[in-house]
Length: 305
Image 1 (cartoon, rainbow, N blue to C red):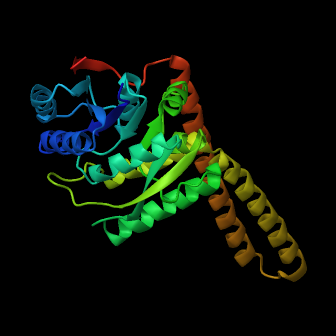
Image 2 (spheres, helix red, strand yellow):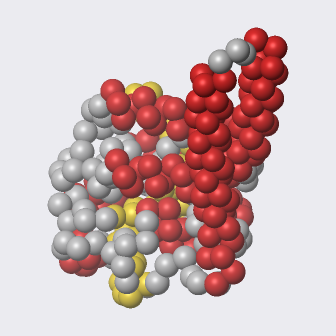
Image 3 (cartoon, rainbow, N blue to C red):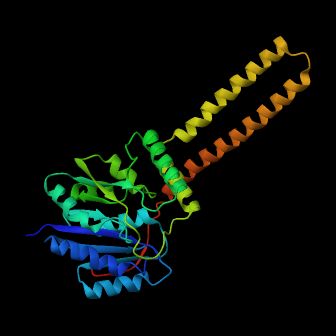
């Protein structure tokens, strides 16, 4: 019996790309003789994404659809698809075809050779602006250092063995970071390089604000370093205050300048203290949301069960 490849494709406001993605990915896999199922996950889209998924299903019964009750985020959409995957392995890729489907047969062949994680690694970042490249590079360098995981060239384009899928689904946390967790689980892994293709239609749904929120959530999911930085700054400012006092006692004749400096130092220290309370509050908020036991997402409709 042929081994089944499940392809998870999250989609948010992608009515213009769903049907083309389904035709392209299915065509590549059919030509390679790979049994497949395509699982589109509609992440609470406000356009006709769900209707496009239904049409893709009518054209190809290998296409399945999952629709969220509202927008829950890309990572949760990926996990919803993984939870419904029936294949011996599962691939994750973007709906806009910037992850090249032509690589899927090669990734599948590497999986058959025994690799349990086949990760797509970007050679370049396509038409992204220089600022976006700089921010993305800085973020992945930072989280790699903090989490002690190599994620500098990470992407969501991956093929995972069933053991890896089951391991990911066993994690109980509500807020999931797919790239980080696939790096965390380990397993036998290899990489395939790719160039980011041009979008076939539509535009990116990531705003600067959503990228910042994603970065904060990802860093705090894998490291407590932001909380520890508060302690470091507290020690630095305490030493600075002591040193300033000593210098004033030894050298100071006019107290005005030293007092102003100490006042500014105190205000900055208070600001950092408040920032530290905010960081601690963010971590406590994560714990609180976890204690509520709410589901990661809610599914309102499915097709092709």
